[in-house]
Amino acid sequence: MDTLTLSSRVGEALLARGWQLATAESCTGGAIAAAITDIAGSSQWFDRGFVTYSNQSKQDMLGVRAETLHTAGAVSEATVAEMVSGALARSQARLALAVSGIAGPGGGSAGKSVGTVCLAWAMEGAQPVVRTEHFAGDRAAVREQTVEHALQGVLNMLAQSDASA
Image 1 (tube, helix red, strand yellow):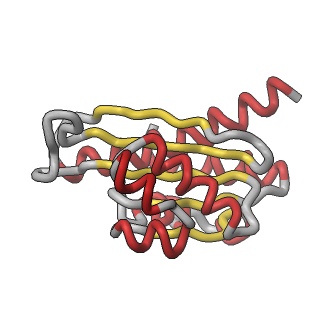
Image 2 (cartoon, rainbow, N blue to C red; image 1 turned 30 degrees about the vertical axis):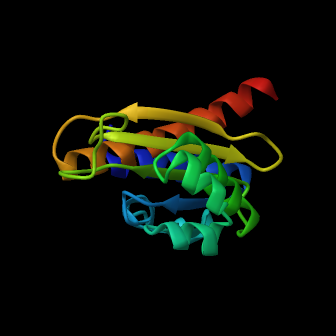
């Protein structure tokens, strides 16, 4: 499914609940927020996006702990869990997502190869759902897959909340 369709579905689902979404992005550099704001009327369901590319910005804007960044690294489930919690706490959103990864072509290591992306989603009052994915392709492909996966994750979270309600 393309990002325009995913963004539209996310918007419809959030609008039906009267909820807003916040994003916290690192490796995508605002591409998720851009995909969302490509949808006319998204201001009704998109509260804000944080682009926190540097470690310092993750700390300043989202409250990610320096200790987490030092011990786990910027590309880690621990970091995106703190990023998504920070996005919720610093917005009007009821649901947030966060991404941090290694889009390439450089920056990879033996433990974290290019294409490694950590994602987190959280609803107000609930623990974050965190996942690590390994996407293939060049920098643009990794970033595109991250955007799609992040948006699909929002739809999955909303479907699960409906099922448990």
